[in-house]
Image (cartoon, rainbow, N blue to C red; front, side, top):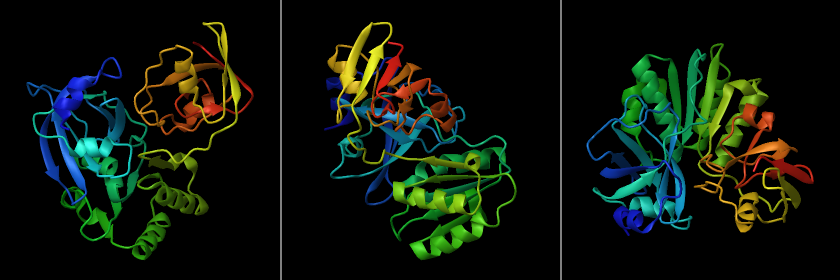
Length: 325
């Protein structure tokens, strides 16, 4: 099914989305395809910071995909998507798109932006994790920022390798196996200049390993940044009670049922798109209680503030929670 068919059959999941046209489709590898979207008249699109992602609607679902451009005065948005045969269907829908198809996309947003105060940006990517990191590399090249990249990929499966080589030159280190990567990572983690920030993207286990090693070597949490493509498998969670202050309604959220699902079952409309804790659309304001944050969208500071939660995946640490709904 093409993107045109998807767009024609699907009602936009969120007000304020952009309708864009597929202007280019090209293969990066046997399993990774790059797709570019543009406006009908080639007009400027909303700019974005490096590391941003775009939520693309397909049918009644939506997935977030990292933008690979620098974000400066864009006339096009480009993403690269790994084909996943047994996934939720988003990657298959993206791989079915053709030039001329119309799609609904969100405005770009980011929780993986480069730190303005960094003296150096150490970028680390594995596999399809190159996509948001490539955006950082473009930004560094455009603005003269100091950056280097460790890219782990199996021979013949690396995406955007030629672009990374051109952007970073000797600042790019390619690792084709885990042992060589471990050597490079240890050396670079122990020789970085003061003020270096680390950014990692790839499979969850890969990121967890990199971040743990950095912490074990004394890197402070404030210098470590990660971007996940999907949340880890979540348990059913404990049941809790949610009070809706403005609606004067109290609802029970059972184990295994999301807060978003409970609100929808009670007849409330909550804007949402990915339902995976990635896109940030289902944010709800918290008045009382302590959320169990399980999303990949809010910053650590926003989670500590406990004034907002993503109701698609997050729950309550206590037995009660009060929302401004």
